[in-house]
Image (cartoon, helix red, strand yellow):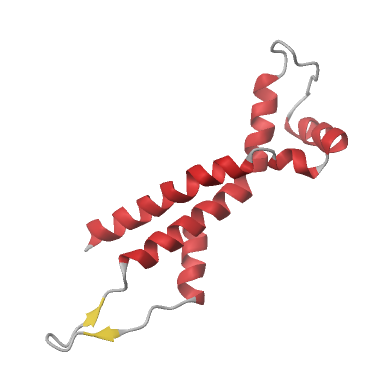
Length: 116
């Protein structure tokens, strides 16, 4: 999350606005951090979701209705990829992103408000 937000800050630097009454530089809008935080959540979700899929598959092995037996993390990755392809690692990612984007947007926005 933080790496994405930092990258967004570098790619899209905030305009420096001067307050004519005080002569000080105004802080960027909180909405900026909220949007960047939401994008950070999306990126974090896309990057970490395949690992969550493998973790869930390892946890579910041996439960009712499952036939696959995995002998470790990399065996699980290899078998999932061989049987279902890359798309299986991202099955259900949309709902995870729908959850993560607002969550991280609120986190970054709240932090920015409390920091002021």
